[in-house]
Image 1 (tube, rainbow, N blue to C red):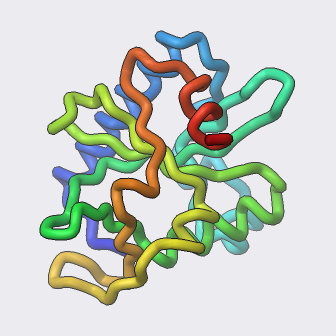
Image 2 (cartoon, rainbow, N blue to C red):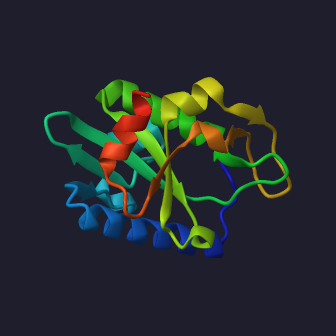
Length: 167
């Protein structure tokens, strides 16, 4: 897992709040999944190391999607985003067992949280370039190019996500 400073945790929480505002703005039904250890069973902790996404959103007549919000900044010079390998593997297992699609959604304060970058866990696993630890991380990460993500602006609805999926 990546080392996460208090500042990065704060920024991650801020990204979750901004995403929740985006969901509310577009009347998208969701369940916010608390990250406190007492909110899940021991079995869940043992099988998934306590890892769970931040949101479960409902797409009417389609079903639920797990969403994990990430505060991420571009990594120069290749314009990629680092995504933790171990975490992605755990989410892949969660997706397979629950049969619920799991996605990362990234943003940051540089975009004023007005741009959301969406990517399914499966695409990260299939196409992310595996890198080894840097001085700032404890584990391996995928270096995922920006063009692998679907960009959704603050004023866009989920229709944009689906229109890009079937392009």
